[in-house]
Amino acid sequence: MPLFRSLLSISACGLLAGCMAAPYLEPEGPGLATLVIDNESIDPLEAATYVSGDTCSAKRSLHPGIPLGGPHIVKVSGGKPFTLWTKSVRAFTSHNEPIGRLTGVGICSGSLTFTPLPGRRYVARFRMEPDKDGLQRSSGSCYAQVAEEIRLPNGSLRRTAQPYRWRTESACQ
Image (cartoon, rainbow, N blue to C red; front, side, top):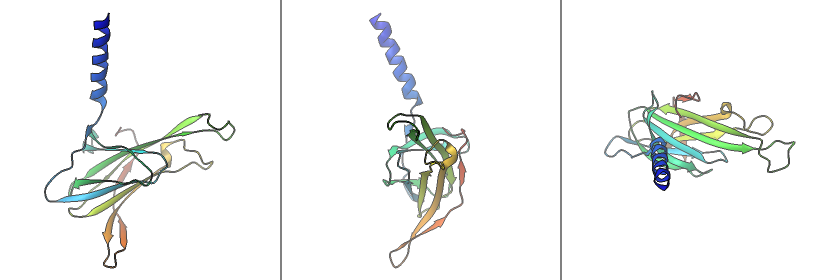
């Protein structure tokens, strides 16, 4: 019996490890762009990318939980479409329930695809907006935007919105 339990534990660990995304390895060499992933939600933001953004295949983990206001910076290949997948989870309580009683969970998940240019700096901002009553209940309240960040001669920053595609469907998980 102990041998059976050991084999079962090893099998379960192997299955779980197979479901985890491999870490993202930053590309090297010329033609790179910088991507700043900015979490504007109060909840940690999980971030990943895919080798193929069109099919959401070969997921690569960028960060397991970017905190509020804590940007995560990565290098990406310039001149090629880049897909950034994010997920944020928020637990909420009802206004009619005692504080601390969990009544639901809101999940904000989606993917943003854009084409960075070599040598440029981009900022991808994510926010999980509360519903009208102040609670988060659906992925319909997700907000995402990507902009190129340019430092002006006077030292100030200018952000120029970039074309991108934001998808909240379940294609990328």
